[in-house]
Image 1 (cartoon, rainbow, N blue to C red):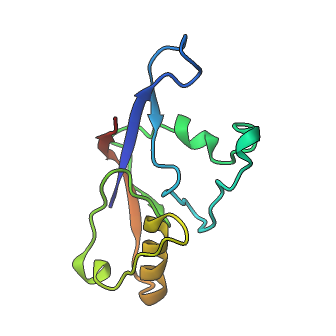
Image 2 (spheres, rainbow, N blue to C red):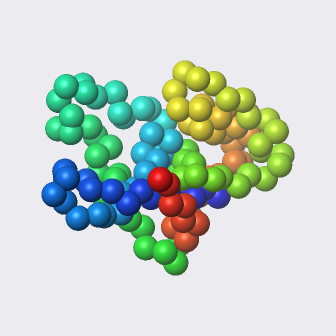
Length: 121
């Protein structure tokens, strides 16, 4: 079960109001494994296919969602799955860890819990 982490920030510049911003888009892979954030930084935000994620605020109390990978500040694992996974720096370390667990045991499922909220600074 992975968390749901947010920052409170001015998204649209210094004159903006403080808003919730969903924080961990790099670790979150909903139904895919590929890193979608290989955009051209000189053309940001027009080329960031994960920009929507920052605005996505799942309501607390809603049902956990099955995802391929995530972290959100804290993930809770069953020990048997945690012990078979290996971290790698090829992509976001959480993604490679979760992918490795799935390759070794197809019964591993990960869920994002909208009620497990972490506030990042």
